[in-house]
Length: 257
Image (cartoon, rainbow, N blue to C red; front, side, top):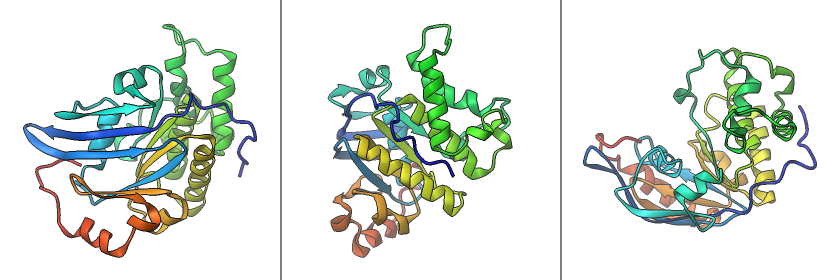
């Protein structure tokens, strides 16, 4: 397994997340309601809730895929649109959201993380290529860079999209169920990378059902069931009583996740 580069490309500045009274709905039905939280730069936060609780909805709003009904989001003090223009937010999606039959190489997938820094012709510079190589080496995929993305294993696919986020150099990293369908070595590699990014000053928000691993690397936790039930330091919030409250009442079946 490749070791992380001792001098990885710098992140694009320190970027915390401030969500203020956010409500998002689908077809007139609320999916998340009155969500308020603040994540400081240089932290890892676990986003915990059952399916349909609003985790993916929150990610879609942070990525600009959904428009909130009310409330606001600021990243590094910028509005969401300004932060997106500055490429401050990177997203690692669930495997189910990706078309694995699309004929594209691993190298090209990771290079997509550099598109926001390129000109209109999207011609990569030497710095773009260096960042892509660095990202692939950090996730131990450099030898597979010419392979078609659909030919990778489940864990390798997750690492490829993590490499795309690393190549982007964003200060905020959103990961949606990155441990689903991966082996223990891939999970450990991802966790080690997230810790290294946190130490560089990144803000990491990770939705996961892998509850056992959360205390080992998450500084803070958000427990959500369409609204924030509890939020704070992992040692204080990630308790059996709070988890029972989070998973005891199912959200409305009409509300998407």
